[in-house]
Length: 337
Length: 268
Image (cartoon, rainbow over all chains, first blue to last red):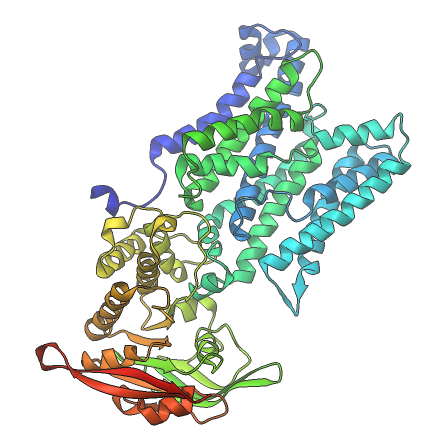
């Protein structure tokens, strides 16, 4: 009965493991790629950059490292926002795109590609429209001065459909030889063009992750439903705004640098639940670590498996779904006890 | 006084549901709200829980007007066991009970060591240690109700609000639940406000010697208040529910007198 008296928090070895997993994934991913580098070249690029050739230095520090770090943040962001939305909306089938984020971002990206020639505008527009989509969903779901989680989901569905129609219009008017392929590739998701100039997107992601991480205990209470959460002493509106705001910053910034990678936000939280149980107290840190590690490895595979890159959105679904089925069978659900 | 409701009126849009309801409850007292469906029992509870804020009149708990209180301040005064609870994620029983400590931490806070201790003592107070580590989604309706009661207890509020607490419980679990409530009221000095359809509940509490008032809410009629044995009479049942019934007295164990209601016929 000793365990009974303890606090339900992660033990020290587990916490260390959670830190090590994404760092190790980033480190490992520096060693592989189309441009062959020896073990020592990679290590020396990191510790004594002046001793290796410019080509190796650039490959490791300017190409592989920023890409892996960005992938880690995106993975963590998508996983955490998925977990947060699942609890806030009390629905295990919800993912990070539930409030129209992906479609909003997609429309922003299309706008930028068609009218402004893509480039940096793609990132700015997709971020702005992703956030706008969530705000619209929130206000579309507002009925007689209150937004309940059900009407907010409804708002998200409506706004998502609206933006998806706008995306179709943009595809229709886009130049089929240059712009349409860019749009299509954007929707498949990729880290191929990521460099340090995109690291501005890590600020909203970091902020969003922090907000959700700090309110992770309240997520448990919110998942009891709005009435019960209120009776337990939560200011539901404030907590929702904080959590949904944080999760939105995460997804919008993630989607704006990587394009849509839809599947991670649904499944990583469930894999986390199978490992650590349902309390968000533990689930949120675990999701950060798993999401980050998973995304880095997926990106590594996407750029090394074949001669040309496989879009990471496709790869995540192809590799992740069978893995999820395997876990589901092995843990007998874990989710519905 | 723990609970003081003074001249409370509430209407949904234009439909009045409660008009001029006054009642008080002291420490260690049970107030049973009776009355037919739609008579406003749940509405009254919702007003006390701060879910309806557009009422007229005054509600105060422990001498504090509840309207200006924040959610967490109110949660320190009033805890709640809902009638229906839809489980979502299979949290363990202990995780659920721990949620009773929410009001003690701020917007970003998480429960500390003391909260875990209070949570564990609530679990043992209700006697659910055996399944404390099990996922509560796998429990029976009766067990789940006890978990929610433990959660309310962990809130350490002087007033517990119960909405039809035994409506989904079997014969035995209903009694078990009533016994625990009796124990909490008698020994911990908790005050209980409960809505119930079961007329034997107030009669049971009275025969157990716990301070209990019955309040009969009826549409368009004055509310009636009184000791259960005096309030629950054939006349009031006919007036309140339109049911012709007899109230019988039976000699119980240890010389107790047990009252029960037998239905004779209807008047509608």
